[in-house]
Length: 316
Image (cartoon, rainbow, N blue to C red; front, side, top):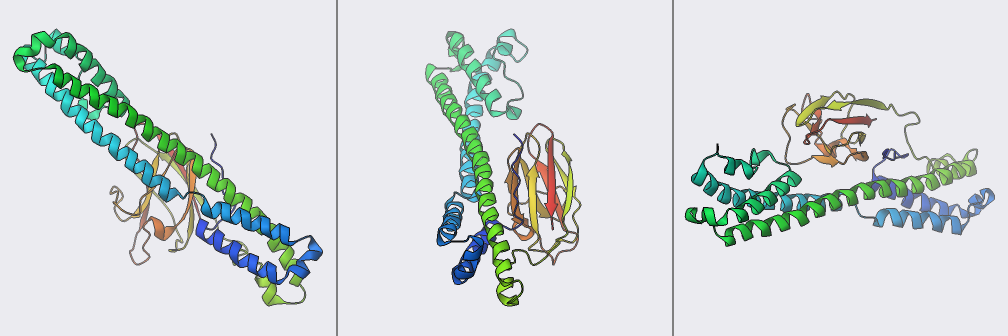
């Protein structure tokens, strides 16, 4: 799915503030705006769009839920690895790692297995351990140990689904929030044009109340590229200020992390924003770690997944 693009170059908070300011100006000028078809009903509709956008769940909320689900899944993966090791160690004691019996358990590179791969591996171990239970009783294997692994696998199965659902929910919310923001901005832009017409030749101060962007021709810069699995790339950005607006777009199939840092390979604990596959996020430079007091600040894109990623960065 192609990511929906924002048609407004301000942050969500600034868009809400813009709606509030323009609404108050329009209430003041309602008699003049009526000549261009602006009524109280029109303004009420714009403010309803403003409230819908403002009340919609934020990316920070959904990010928290996603991180929580991921942490819970990863913790259970650790428990599954422990339970698998408790069983396959007994198999190794009984027959050695070179034996056919050991190989039937299908355990290898356990620390590098992805969640679904680990789940499949664990189920295989339960199956084989049950089959060899009487043979491994001499090594201390009991049905209780097998049951413990099976219980952790059931937990992991549910947590994998919950974590995937949290990603899907965030993806949808990102799309929906952008859709709501675009609708609000479209209404504000039309109101602004009508407001400027009211005062174009008579009152410069009131005319200025309807100017959305102070810069009539903002300098927009765009870079794009690819990032290999488990790698970070430095994106060359120039003329950045703390309040510069960045549109971070993930154009690939894997999640990407964006952040400013002076170390091209270091991923800090704070100021990292995660952008899901085929999604965009609008944010200011300072919110992703930009510090104008530090020289040579770098914008990094990190790909934590096992597949190639791609990105586009736009800023002014």
